[in-house]
Picture 1 (cartoon, rainbow, N blue to C red):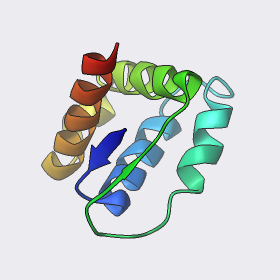
Picture 2 (picture 1 turned 120 degrees about the vertical axis):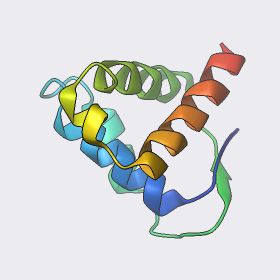
Picture 3 (picture 1 turned 30 degrees about the vertical axis):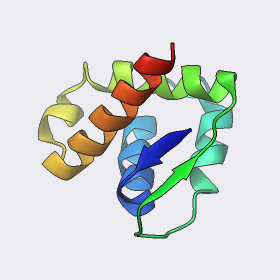
Length: 90
């Protein structure tokens, strides 16, 4: 179970990270991110092991880009929180 403070921020941060990632590498993740509701409230969700690994890998790749450096702090924070939760599960 992954908890996020805002589905909207998480969704937007993941959309940005997917834009700068390798084309086609994260297609299932991209489809899943697009299905996230635009609900600003605190929420949680379950991920399959494959999606967990894709999210972890995508965030890790994204952190190595110049785009990540310029990302809004609230987006960085939510990605960091998700990354911590995924690493605790691993």
